[in-house]
Length: 313
Image 1 (cartoon, rainbow, N blue to C red):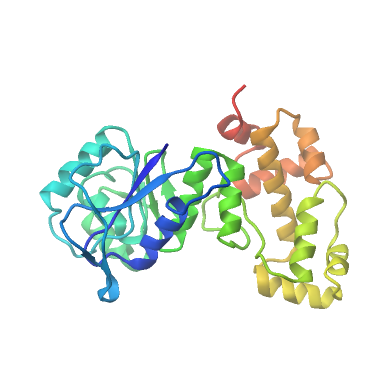
Image 2: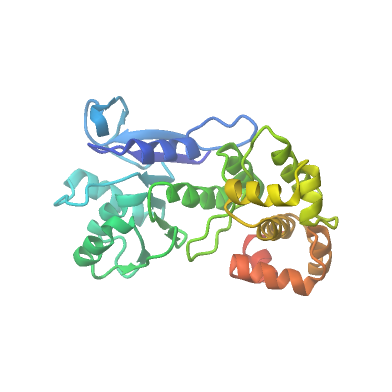
């Protein structure tokens, strides 16, 4: 079982903390294996979060039983990191374990020197002060997160979910990440100057509109045009387009292409089929068309994606 520790410091931000717990701490009995997550602190007694909320969390002195550490946030004006905290996190890092920061949590990692000569990001509000304080960090803006396999930093609060879904995909595969994304009711794939290797799903609404989108996702291998989507939603084309842009924030055509790319990613991970067959099952007219849209959306070719994320045989 993969054990995750979420660090709760004084004035921990409740939203970022909740995002980490929702991703890694929520029981998921539909999976055979999942994370075991604890919210921890290096201090004794309750932790005071924002809005004077008092939290009873697990007090620890060591992190050796955990495989991943998440820092939801950290004071941007903090001075020296407490010695006990610094010593244990550095030990954790040197053992090769994974550390993630959400939003201002990157300040703690940078303060400890873990981001030196590494690509990292944080919330845009803190970009200037972060770069001034840590000039040896390769700061990256216009991304949702930066992740190199051991250390990951999300650009803001909600983008911690994007980073978390990438970690779930890495640990449990594309299907698990997709299922968690659906539980979180994520809308279309978010862009931010960086390819996302997680699924994007339509809002789960109890309506004919949502049922039309579900129908499209289940029938991607068939010819689907926007008029047929509108008919399935029992709407005129004009009303459907307006509803779609309001709900999904994308045009129907772009959304449909993204769903086909998502289907191709799933097949590349799970099946040893030819690229031509995957293009057919994903609903692309040709393998060339699929390669074009895949590279533009994901940032790498289908072959490279399979090499990186496909099942081992």
